[in-house]
Figure 1: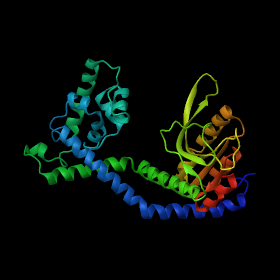
Figure 2 (figure 1 turned 90 degrees about the vertical axis):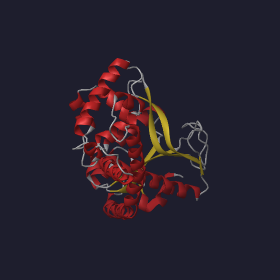
Figure 3 (figure 1 turned 135 degrees about the vertical axis):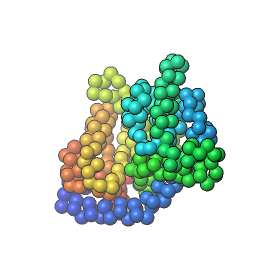
Figure 4 (figure 1 turned 30 degrees about the vertical axis):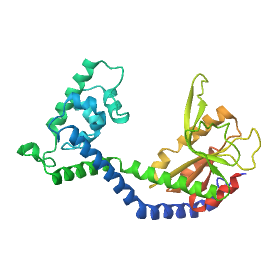
Length: 320
């Protein structure tokens, strides 16, 4: 029997309570999460300044040795430039820039001569656009002081963090949600199984749970298998051989717009899971924040139930 999906008369009150919980958390903890990330990012910027001799040596050799410096350099220009804008301005291969920024590497199969030519074009664009108000020593030719370096690094870190503020907050909120689930489970005798233990969907033991487990599923054609991540996998204490664990997707949202834009993702995920493991798959959402009746109605119509974080004890109604 559904726990919340079949009770629309309760949704309005639950939505209000969920929004309150998210807002209270955001006001109390989001600034510190952002600041902590900014401190780490400022340290990374200072490392980039060391590698590039305080931006006086932006060369293909440096970019090849330190691919991770590229997003920092993009935020060191006036104006700061987005990844796609850099690709367009420099006329370089998107795959090169994507590898440097997302995988901190140079594409392993790309020819050296091509790499150097592309990196030279990137270097020239960055050098032309460097924000000399932030890095005044580039005009004066005088070695920067430690204070100037720290100030410049903090400004660039602010720009970097501003560009990814939403992911920073979302990551902090997800960690908190998983901590809530873990505390609730351990208080009831469950044991956490850390990652890297080779755990699989069909090997998790009764009373155990794991986070961010990759579960292999077959695509609709059946010719290809992919892994899909699930935030929490919990095998009930009273489960029998052959039973499937409860699968939980932890979701938080700071506004009503984005969840509705992405609400089909859960429907696709459960369809893939059921297509691979049968209709006995038990997949629910763990919600905190801005999820309106439109979102809830869509998920309910797709056969997806949920537990609200502000009423975490509802997890017991899902058999755990």
